[in-house]
Amino acid sequence: MYTGNPDVPDDVFADVLRQVSEFVRTRVVPRELEIMQSDAIPGDLRAQIADMGLFGYAIPQEWGGGGLDLVQDVELAMQFGYTSLAVRSMFGTNNGIAGQVLVGFGTEEQKARWLPGIASGEVVASFALTEPGAGSNPAGLRTTATVDGDGWVIDGSKQFVTNAPDAGLFVVFARLRPAQETGPGIAVFLVPADAAGVEVGGKDAKMGHAGSGTAEVFLHGVRVGPEALVGEEAAVGYRAAMTSLARGRVHVAALAVGCAQRALDESVSYAASATQGGTPIGDFQLVQAMLADQRVGLDAGRALVRDAARRYVTGEDRRVMPSTAKLFCTEMAGRAADLAVQVHGGSGYMREVPVERLYRDVRLLRLYEGTSEIQRLIIGGALVKAARSDGA
Image (cartoon, rainbow, N blue to C red):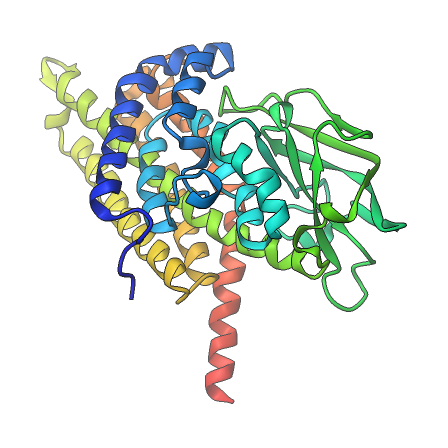
């Protein structure tokens, strides 16, 4: 049973949530066009975000973070999803898939070395897992780590690495032995961005998420010492990847709920004010039906995210429910954004209308941190496995 986070009591968190909600709506939403057109987060917004502690809200307090658990994390994520997703991406890897590898699997020395800077925003941590032949399933990794004295030499390349152009630390997943041998054979290394042999490619041009920098990362014979191996044990790597991705899937599901809320709010506002033949389009039953479908999906998704987060924190389910939440909520947000454009008609296709940006932004949610197809395989496979176990 979830009894709350003793590090951040409910009354304290309620104030944090209120501040974040106000910041998103009064400081970020009015600057969405600026972010989109400049393809960058304004420096003053970044400074405000750092001052609010958002670069480390999910990092334990002992390392300078906010100490929020996943139940609280998803409430913030639903606020972050209400606006340009690039803003959340700026600090998302610190709190999520990169930072949580260190929180969950790093040694005390590794945590002391990196987590305070990650929590303050002085260090941007990037999660370097995806490769051309290995995305949602890390078993296909080709980047290698070879023993070199008491350290390692890493060779390979990564793609779609969020925050790579600004990263101070790469959390790199590499193969220690061929995939066909026993076990996953994957380890995780902490590679400083300024290490010799690290090369960051040009900033990717993407369909959406303007303002978020992703790029390829090349590792040319990068030498790291024994202190770079996360957990001081190679076997930790695969577990770190799976655990971090599962947690991240709940967070992404919550982002999707925030996007769906924005889609609904924009749709209702437009339907109530726009007219056709002198009649507000919100009076038309087919438009009301689209609004109703958005609302139903939104409410279902919000409940599912909260349940998945609670089960993750209690340890009841850290595999299937994260996939269930991500699959449903990201697909739901895609439908909500599509309906929002439809409600707006031709106006919804115009570049400077919020729902047009939203339509492009939400498409990525069904791809990263495990595609919808991977989530279906995880859910379906678990159901079959459970049935076989029950029948044994």
